[in-house]
Image (cartoon, rainbow, N blue to C red; front, side, top):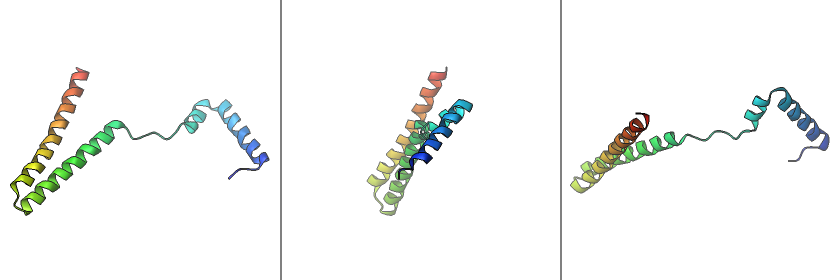
Length: 95
């Protein structure tokens, strides 16, 4: 919805004065909202895979299927291996 001309001029004037009075605040208000950090997204994905692996193990046990249990166990172990590799790489970067 478009504002009337006089209201738009008033808002532009307020914005200009804010930028003059407090440029840091003006810059902060015009910046887009921060995204979720990549590290958080990776962690959420890995934890989701872990939960799926556990559900597959439970499904395999309840259906007495060794193949399904093994598949779920591989997923769970793969997530642990991925965590270990990420931790090792982080330690190598810092050291």
